[in-house]
Image 1 (tube, rainbow, N blue to C red):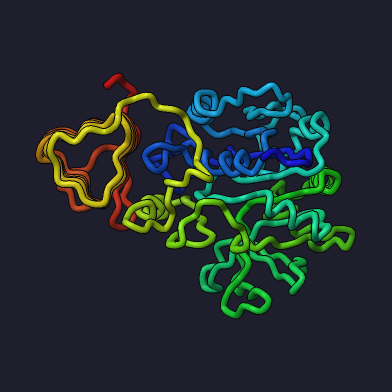
Image 2: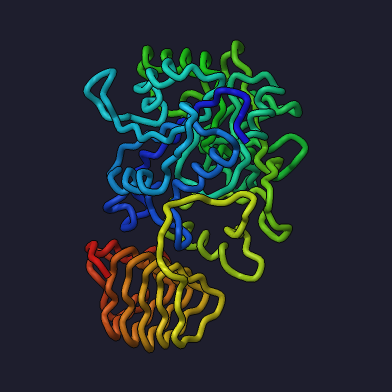
Amino acid sequence: MRSDLRILGLVMAGGEGRRLLPLTEERSKPSVPFGGSYRIVDFVLSSLLNSGIYSNFVLVQYRSQSLIHHLREGWRISTPHPDDFITVVPPQMRVGRVWYRGTADAVYQNFNLIYDYRPDLIAVFGADHIYRMHIGHMVRFHRKKKADLTVATLPVPVSEASAFGVARAREDDTIVAWEEKPADPPEMPGRPGWSYSSMGNYIFEPGALVNVLKRVMEEDLEPDFGKTIVPLMVEDPAYRVAAYDFHRNEVPGVKPYEEKGYWRDVGTLQAYWSAHMDLLGAQPRFDLNNRLWPIHSQSYHRASPRVLSATLEDCSLGVGSVVDGARIVRSVIGRNTWIETGAEIVDSIVMDHCRIGHDTRIHRGIVDRYNFIQDGEVIAVDAAQRREGAKVEGDLIAIPRGRTRPI
């Protein structure tokens, strides 16, 4: 359902994702494949469109060709309404010959988009996380609170909150203090042991955003939302800043067994792997099969997966894939991947367009797209030999993207 307000979505999709190497060697973090059929960016774009927000600019920077191609192929909006668009915006150097120097600078350099669109509200959302969100609920909360800025916050245990920007809020949800990665995080009102952590998603009144960004640039402050914009607005009595508790968000079609307020920052190999494991099981923590709130992505016109013979247990197979005499346990297999006789894949992620040879073993591995795992090869931390470019993180091993080729 289309929002009655003119809401402009600004999607921050320039993330480099250094901690997710080698998966980000040739692409930005939002472009990394996820769940056998998607890219990470699909989750924020699906939340925006499912919430009736159809006017969206995607601000890109780092190794953006893969992301641009995906958006061109998978996110075409064909309607007669002039405000229905998803448009990629690379750095244009409109205010100097510099790249985007931070999330807030990316918005500052594209003030023309705000002036041209003249929105009632601006939704500044990150493109690096796995979640579903009915943004309309957050918008209604923002307007009810008469806020200049509303920050989407996620309750987390105090012991984990030091990794995030943390809000100190009153009972009426007004943020009265903000700390970035504090050593001693403040607790939520009425909920001891928990803190309000930032999800990196914001609803702004346009005038407030423009004025604060101008001040940041004039005073040469760090152009970052979490480190600078939010604290400045919290400290300024001219602005009202509210905390929106993500656990209040209600998304249609979510199953009773799913984790309430599911949100994951898949910024490390371990977090990325764990989020994939959350998709599996009879009652997954995050069930992608939701017809009322679908995750949209690029269409892939291939036949259903074929299993010639196999031992399969708690796994997901992408369309166009073929399994011939392999054993696959608790793993996510991407599209158009051929897995041959004697292969064993356990607790692993294998992306699109791979060929897994005879008698191979992949254990707690992440195999990027277009790889050919040779007959008898072992992809595991305990392997006698490791592929060039492989990265080990704890008990996980990740193999970088192979060379693009027809398969």
